[in-house]
Image (tube, rainbow, N blue to C red; front, side):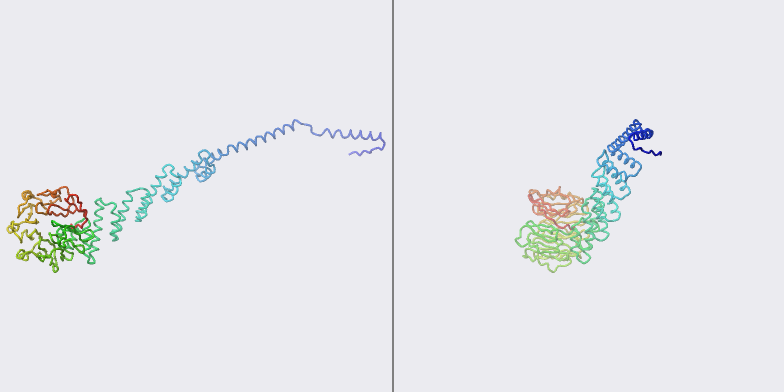
Length: 519
């Protein structure tokens, strides 16, 4: 740079200043002066700022749409978990919540298809009834129950079948459960499981089988009486019937759980105790202390009981010595007239107590007897060959049986004898009765009972018919069904049904007793 020496006088100063100004002019011309360019730059920057701001605003406004589209894309590409999280973050936007439910439902279905039924139940339950979730919960419960059933875990199978409302599954579980208990020897437990479905033939047979086994258990320690009590509270199958007969040492059909005179009735209750109702003038109803009784008979002044030990007990009048039975043993069946009692022994002979002198002594000579019955003052016996014997008062020829053969059943009315041959044909001997002509045309009398004035017969199919006087409706028995024991006395008839209930023709009295069924 040229150094300029500044003069000290004024003129010189002016000249020097002028030179300095001249020198500095070129330097001032080099300063930029393009204002338009600057303006354009500013405008561009401003535009970019506006665009950026607009982009930010648009991005904020449409952020959920963008996120939804992204979630939908993830879902379409199979990344379900990521898609679900994105839809969850979107909350109530559009159908995001619905998309979450659909994803959860599909997942629950996949879990169910994979047979993880317990987890499926959890997942479907969380869906609160979406689509068919409730139905799938039931299906899962059923599948769980099926698994438990196949494993033999019947308790849990029952629980889950009940949750699913699958009654058929519950039934099959109870039946199989009972089968398992039966196989393990828990017969009472088996019966409990089967009883809700009683009525079906297969189930009823299972129950009978279990009850039969209980009979055998009861008999094993020697408590035969309890075994028979158990047997006679069940519907017999052939094995049980044979078992009872074997334990009784007599035909089970010869035992009588209910009997009546003209003035009182006596019966064995379901707990094995004995009860009586009616006249007790001679103490004939004093039977409440009796135990172990399997058969009964009643006369006007007495009641007799046959014990399981084959001994006999008596209550009532002692006027003719008819209660002197303490020494009797091995008795198969009993019957009684008004003043005597007769016992058929297991060996086919007959013993007696009471009666008028000379009336019944010949009974001690009878042998091979299989059945006995008694009227008011006579006794009749049937032997194994079909021959008939009689003793006692014969005022009406009720004892004229010596020449009759081929008889299969007998019964006694007060003053008559009824015989049934092998063809079921009925013959009446003794006092004329209103029913005589009617019953002698009968050809299917499997069992019978007679009073003074009417007779009741049961055919081989179990149907009842009655003939004779009917002023008290004592013959109105045709509608009775399922009768195993019946008694015709005076002017009434009483029947015991297979379920243990009692029916009677006595008007206004149901006599709703429950007795043992010695079938």
